[in-house]
Length: 239
Ligand SMILES: N[C@@H](CCC(=O)N[C@@H](CS)C(=O)NCC(=O)O)C(=O)O
Image 1 (tube, rainbow, N blue to C red):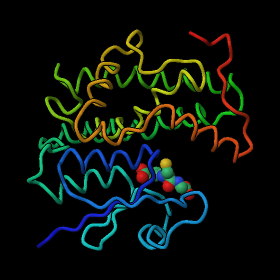
Image 2 (spheres, rainbow, N blue to C red; image 1 turned 90 degrees about the vertical axis):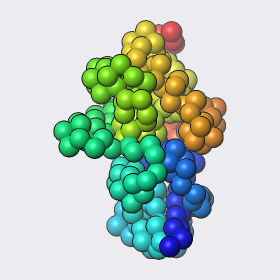
Image 3 (tube, protein in one colour; image 1 turned 120 degrees about the vertical axis):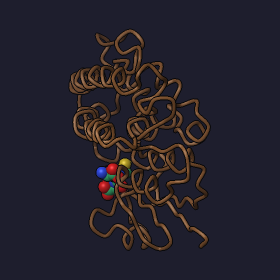
Image 4 (cartoon, protein in one colour; image 1 turned 30 degrees about the vertical axis):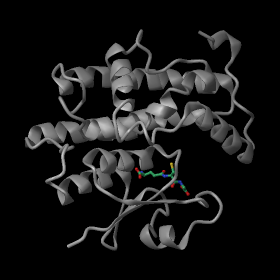
């Protein structure tokens, strides 16, 4: 049977990027549909395929929708077991460990990150960046354990945690311009800084990784629409 894969997405979304990375790295052909009205009137396709949360990404496989980025990544691994790389380890304990760190990214890292670009004051954003830094230090230790001295959380090849954290790499690299704090910095988290460089250079990743300047412009536009002042780093936090 011919497989039909469609991804409904939005270019700047770290969650959509995860799904794109997984599809691209596995070499699965898919149609990409940009949800142009994500913040101003969602498309009938999005409303029908994710009626509960109405958010991107949604993967539609042979007409059946799968919402939620982490579920999509895991679904692709299960639905296309012959497509490498396998993103989830075969060993049940290693698989549980990978899921733990993937869920840590959406819990600790994401909740700390949101005020870095959505915070009202420079101080608020810099304080949030400090919390992101602490979460990244924890992930630095996780990288040491999961990668076993190889290049990725998944070992020699990319795995679930690489793809999940990888969705944030483009945004994390904008932190200095947003709040004056450099994140994914070799001085603080050398393993993660090197990993981020390695990850964003991969075929299948580099083509869809959003450009930092475009993200900054997008963030300014979103902030203006939400009535928030523009981001300019407080001078005391310049590095
Ligand atoms: N937990 C979801 C989060 C998805 C999400 O927040 N998507 C945002 C774009 S970054 C969205 O669709 N926002 C539109 C809205 O909330 O109305 C996932 O992992 O897929």
